[in-house]
Image (cartoon, rainbow, N blue to C red):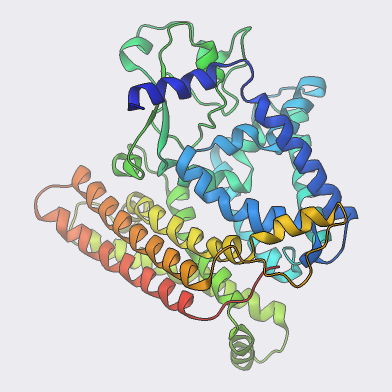
Length: 445
């Protein structure tokens, strides 16, 4: 199939009256089953279908979905469907508060950090009830946002997955854009305002002028509404969008380094030597309280990559015309491919070493037991090979992204003078990742 035919097929799918509902309703039904199992079902994580679906299947594959098909998940996410239903029947559709528009991504960054910290403090992942309460709290937030504010305010400005989705979708292989020559002559703005065919863009984007994929969820509304058939859907080289960020934002670059720190935390706390690390940290801090020890470790894991990135940006500022903060803002995006690689490499362990637990716990709902059977989909040698392959690809993609960003912003010797520090930074980060993956890890299920 040629690229042109493939793009037309994707566009036809988005234009269909059955899309995205044909995916939304099954997803919402599965979500309801998961919620029931987490809150009412077996209280042991190892045997709970909701835990397996959430933390062994959904959470590990969500970064891959964002990379391959952008924020498609956001179009069919049960939270989004609940928000739409609430808004349809009881929504006040008030304008988004100004502070959310201004600080939304920072709030998302903070929520992402807070939820990761809370998981390790209260053992959310290892507790079906804890996972259920977390999802219930998020559902409550979705309902409140849908009842008071217009469109998908929650998804755009508050969802902790939204920041992750935005960063990874920028590096994704799929993009939706308006055709500039056609859109320049359009005066109806149906893509944003909506028509009788479909509502306006739920993510507050103006497809006519949209130049990035960070907030497009491929809901198809703009494709259905456009009177000029201007909207195109096409594939692209992954990470290409990162090379030409026109309006870099500090909060988005900050999230990129935060994700790197969170991956470090997730890896460190799963190591078999974590108990020894805790004991060592406790000796330094003069306490045996595991919550305090983890919190300090967590802060350090967040701070070190951020400080190293700032130092690298300062060194680069000696070679180019930007200051350290502006360099950090621009080149934080270059870390997104390595973020994805480290994140996905970590998730592969859960997905492939414990993947069959989804099937086993699902069959258990019907009284079919599979006790004593390995939950691994493949052997550890295969998993390790895939992890290292991902890290190699992520490293190369990040280094190349840094080069392209430098090339589009500077000239002459400034380019290499800027690229070299960020190349060294990338190699340091990946070396630490490799070291952590060499150590034995504990299973989640």
